[in-house]
Length: 56
Figure (cartoon, rainbow, N blue to C red):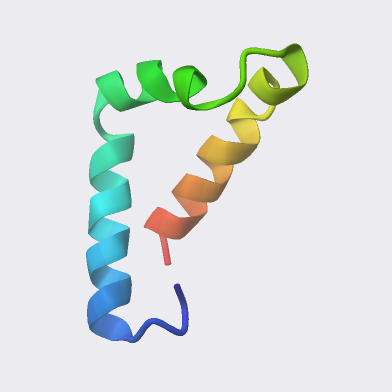
C-alpha cells in the first residue's frame, strides 16, 4: 500500500477506516475466517493490521 501512490493509498486508507468504523463489519469479521480455534484466534491480528493500514 505504501507503494501504491498517494491517491490510491488515501483511498484504501479511507475505505479500511470506514470498514473499521462499521460495527457490523467488526461483528462479521469472525465469519471471514475458518471456524477452527487457531483461525479465530487470529482476529486480533487481522484487526491490528487493518488498523495499521487505516493509519498509513
